[in-house]
Amino acid sequence: MAEFCTPNPLPAAAESRRSFLSGVALRGLGVSIALPVLDSLPGIRTARALAAEPMIPVRMAFLYVPNGVNLEHWRPTGVDRDFSLGRSLAPLQSLKNEIQLITGLAHRNGTGGPDGPGDHARATSTILTGVRPRKTAGADIRAGISVDQVAARGIGQHTRLPSLELSCDAVRKSGECDSGYSCAYSYNMSWRSANEPATAESNPRLVFERLFGAGNALERKASLQSRQEKQRSILDFVVSEARSLNTQLGSADKSKLDQYLTCLREIENQIIRVEQLGLPSVKDRSLPAKPPVAYSEHIRLMADMLVLAFQTDSTRIATFMLAFDGSNREFPEIGVNDGHHTLSHHEGNANKLEKIARIDHFYAEQLAYFLERLSAVKESDGGSLLDHSMIVYSSGISDGNKHRHDDLPVILAGRAGGQLSTGRHLQLPKEQPMSNLFLTMLDLIGAPEKQFGDATGPLDAVRA
Image (tube, rainbow, N blue to C red; front, top):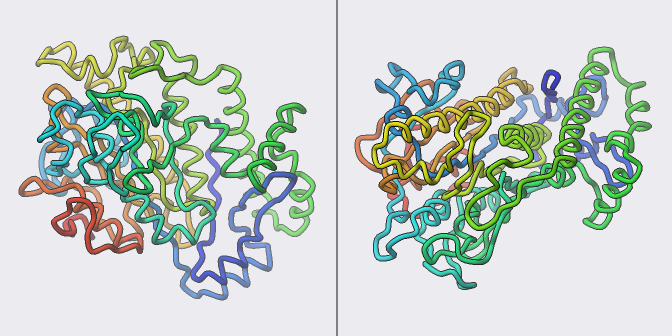
C-alpha cells in the first residue's frame, strides 16, 4: 500500500462553524466523502479566521485482545521513565515515548464471585463497563453502559457517527457461549444500555459504506449494488465534483487531494480483494483453523478505516475487538497452529507459554501499525492525530491459566491534546478499578461523570 493518506481536518470550535465546514465534501449518488483541509478554498480561510486558536478535538478508542497474556514477557522492567519494554511489546519500541504502560488495574466484577465459571464472558462484558453481568444465557441479559457509550452521549452530537464499533469476529447476540453466559456478553464490549450491546461490524465493506455512503440505508444499499454490478469505485461517483474542485486549488492542495483520494481507492481495492476471498465465519467459540483472509490483513484494514474515521471527524469514539474472549483462533501466519484459548490454559508448560508470547508479539505489531498510522496524520497545530487521541489497548484477563482479572495488561497511548503523560511505566501502588481510568478519560474528552462503573475515584496519575 502506498503512503497512508494524511488529510488534515479542521475541527469545529463551535457548532455553527461545524455546520459551515460540513459542506467541504465530495458528493455523488449515494456517496459523501469528507475532505482534508485545503487552504486554497476561500471557505476554509474564512473558517480559520473564525477561530484564532482552533480547538482540535480529542479522540478515544478501545482495542481489545482476548485470553490474557504471557505476563513474564509482557511486563516492563523499571518504573516511571526509566523502563524497558518486555519482549512481547518489542514492536512498540519506536513508539515508547507515545505510550503509558499501566500496571495495577483490575476488574473485580470479572471474577467468579457468586457466579462461578464464565470468566471469558465476564472479561469482555466488564472491560468497558466495570459492572458484573447477570449470569444468563437467555434474553434477560444485563450488564452496564460502557465508557465509550457514555462518552458518545456526551459529545456524539458533534460528529456524524456518535461512535464506531469494529470487530474481526462475526458478532453473536444470542445462545450460550461460556458456562451459562449469553454470547452477547462474549462478543460485545460496547453497551448502549444495561441490556443492549452496541453491535460491532466485522465486514470491512460495510464499515467503508457506513463511513462514505450518503443517504438513507436503502440509498446506500442501492449505491453499493450499482457499483458492484458495474464494477466501479466509490470515487467514480464523485469524479466530476473532484475535477471541478481541482480548478479552485493551488498546486500543493491538488497534490494533497490526489494523495487522499488515491488512498481511499487503495483501501477500497483492498476491501474488494478481501470480499473475493470471503470472510471467516464464527461457529460456537472458535473461528476456522485456516480463515480465508489473513488475520493481520483484516486487522490492519479495519485499523486503516478507523484512522480515516478519526481524521475526517466522522466520529471521535470507537471500540475495536481484535477477537472475542475465549477465541480459539489459530495463528498460522506466525507458526502457531494451536488454538489461542487452548494455549492460554498453559499450566506452566514452557512450550505453550512461548507460543502465547508469540501471539502477544503479533498483537503488539498490529497495535504498532495502528499507532504509526495515527502518528502520520498531522493536524492544524503541527501535532499528530495520535497526539490528540487516547487509545486504550487491553485484555480483560491477565493470566489466562488462572483466569485472573487483576494486574490487567493495559497500554494507554496518545497525549489527549497534551493532557496525558507518556513515555513511562505507571506502576500503581495497589490494585485499582480500571473504571478509575475511564472516569478520568471521560473528563479529558469533555463528557465528565461523577461516577462510572465500580470506580472509586479518578486516576489522575495518568495526567500530564
